[in-house]
Length: 177
Image (tube, rainbow, N blue to C red; front, side, top):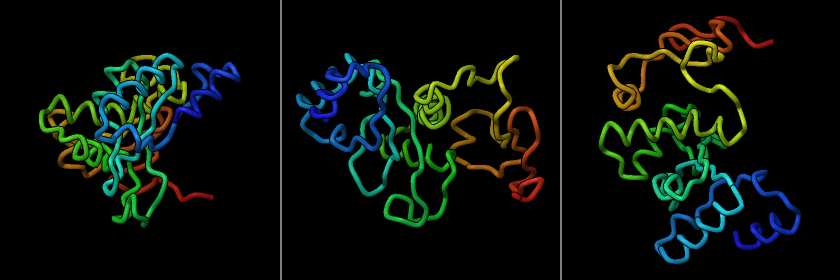
């Protein structure tokens, strides 16, 4: 990671780099981790995590407290990162919450934020909010709170992309070409 930071400085790429996985930020060497987080913040480097069940992962709160943008993703199906064949971000939010020992509603909602709006911020997607005037890209599922929706995981009743219905009751409304 130090070498990546050196290249960012040398090439003038501040604010243009995201590091995926960043397993070293989950290591128990807190002084070194804190130094890395400070250097990453200085160069405005975003962090992406898979919340891998089989590895140490960056602490969501430490990364965000350092002022970094953070998102999450799912880069594999039926592999050691995701052996349960669930490549959806709601499931990823559960994994991120579990890996970070999140137990309160606010913390579980934070895991969902990292897996949705956090990822959009890393990619520079503007207006990724659930507000009037923003693109309506969302999944509607039961729950009285975000944490309950993450914990129960559905079923997804309705999926919208750009305000258009793309799925109902967990099934696409049209087949891919």
